[in-house]
Image 1 (tube, rainbow, N blue to C red):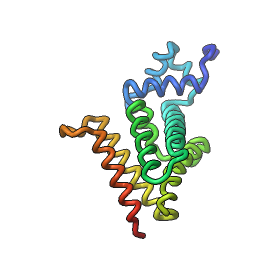
Image 2: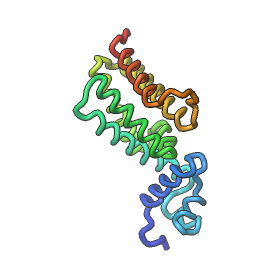
Image 3: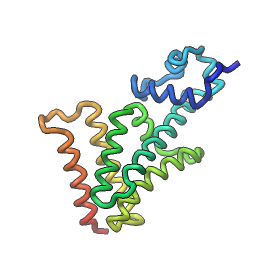
Image 4: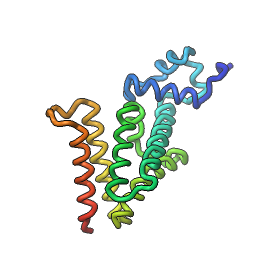
Length: 188
């Protein structure tokens, strides 16, 4: 009999909280079961296995990140929009390191919910790039540059990879300014 109140959504939410605490790479079904106070076999009534749990966590994380990015870009354009979305992305990575790691997985084409969440995140970036006149292949390249730059910063910051004494917020703002300059001066 499944534990009363235990649902697949509850399992995934607890897994997300645990991943943020211990790291995405250390997330196991046994740890989730322990956190929920249930026997490990009880989880199999709600999630098929660790791979399925990681997939569901990726969907949750991408959806959350997409929501924050979409909110950040609303009513903004140009550098203001670029900065707002970059900050939303960085803040999400800081608040939810385990979920952030899960969100880096390419959406599974067999999971429509994952694909839709990934599309919402990408659409937030494309909305910004459209303001720079970047569409088609140029927008794909520019979106990859944006993701690489912001993800790289977030990842290095998370592991303490910036050892110089200069403030990180200023460096992050300079990164966004450099992206703005690149997009303004884009040549196909």
